[in-house]
Image (cartoon, rainbow, N blue to C red; front, side):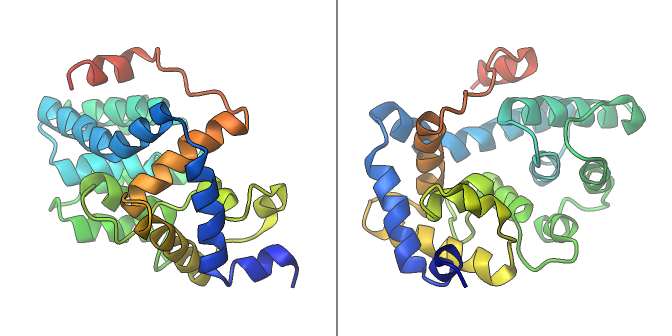
Length: 228
């Protein structure tokens, strides 16, 4: 077992790495992260109101379409798919950036008889007990509740000290729970929630890793944000 695998067994050690990055965040990054999930919630509300789609379904679609997609494109794809659904159009007419099975999952969520968050979460979880898309769903639907934390590949890498070797480590349920615990441990001493912390350190990581911010000139995304 190498050092990274050992660290995955120690949420306290991963919490130190998360805290270290948090302390390097700029004021603007901290502000962006603090409000990120609340803004995402408001965006979903606006889409739901526009197309008479229940909020849990909108958020479920957003989460289902999120893998391998930047946030602005995620919003545009969800908007377009929900618009097509509301007009009785075939989802085949909508191009989404994510993988085909994720789009199919989003369509199943739209066609559920009830907009029940637990039914939607089960669609997102599929065969796993915990994963990124279901956590993302709950974090956007209920941004005041940080029991679950969205652990994507960036959150994973941050907790392991930004080691490129992290990309080669498989996620398991135990590791996911250890990573969530690490964010909770770090958040306790920082006067932020665990999901706010996850968003803040992502903003800092994006800058330090030289990852360009997603294109905010996406017309659909910008028109929705302008209404908030």
